[in-house]
Image (spheres, rainbow, N blue to C red):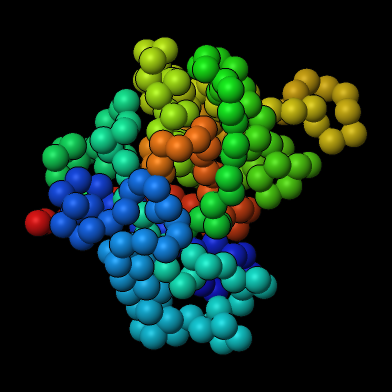
Length: 231
């Protein structure tokens, strides 16, 4: 990841008892300044990459712009506000286990969708919002995975509708399509399949916002890796 011209950075997502023990923020302001845990874990990872891996700007690191995520990039999942099972259970771990997931992605982009209280239109707006990732003319987009951090109020809309995480992912995937460049022909999908959308619930409850973090495109592709953390 560090050798590419891309600005993607390893993102750490902490779940379960490890999140609480480490003081990892999963609510208001989780991508910004806040509890020490987020800064320490993310910074430790970036220092390993720089000093053990040798990935320093102008040397091994060839990124054109870099990203604040290359300084520190660690969050927790807001499991208490989620209507679904936490992220690490998708990798076969138990909900009560501590875990850390690593995923190479770009900086978060805010999706503000207010006043939508029904699951179908909300999925439609979120899906269409994803059509500009990397390039608005790139259909389908071969990036492996994209991480969506649904704000608790957005997640609650899907929860009240009785939708599972899989149903939510499918609906957003179906909505992420547009007319191909130059017009003509059937609509083209942005992603190769719904499994390319990874969903967590994170952030505060002050407004109807979500975040999207695209993975690496074209060359390496982004794949999430999850490991248990023993507390």
